[in-house]
Image (tube, rainbow, N blue to C red):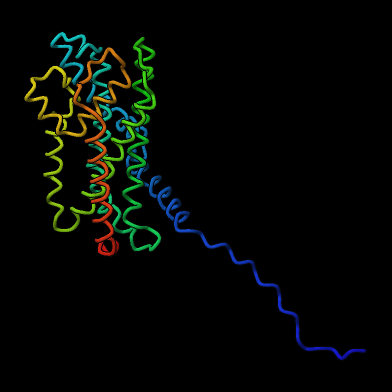
Length: 278
């Protein structure tokens, strides 16, 4: 009979959970921050949700009232309401991305104590919320216009999606650049950025068709890349009834978007550690 041993077998080691990749961690953080941003934006009440959706609509209806007082039934050969919706709402998306993303890092400084949360995650999460809000507002407007009998089906859907996507990327890139570049003592520049949105808005063609402007003023407005995108967007949505400007195209918006994105990412990489420490 074998002698009894005092050595007990070791229990099998518990299975080590797989290590998550950095992309998986980033997705989880952005999702959690997006929910937090959405709750903050809606203010936890139905009234907040109504105001978030109603604010862009009130801007559009306000301009519609102005044109109605002028007895303008069409603008540039297009129904006044369709013209305003196709210009106002995309520009409001661009402006909201720039101005709200500009404050995203400072609004989440307390969360950067967790090493999983990076400053750019807060910017991406706020951009996700802004795009979600815009999608709801745009879908509500188009559904309402279609129900009222307006022709809202786009003539060139892919070109419409491309114009909206490029405008969103441009707004995100500029918002990220401002968020990183105006932190700390430079946050006083944010008031200047907000004021600069007014001339960008006026020269974008959101209110006045560029084709109706004098040649000199039209040439000046065409230095605005947003004007090119809005013209391409309206042409894709409204088709041949819209009188597009011959000199608009994709080159200037693409160059602006690429240049702004590279500048924003380079500046973020240079200041990432300082931003993480607050």
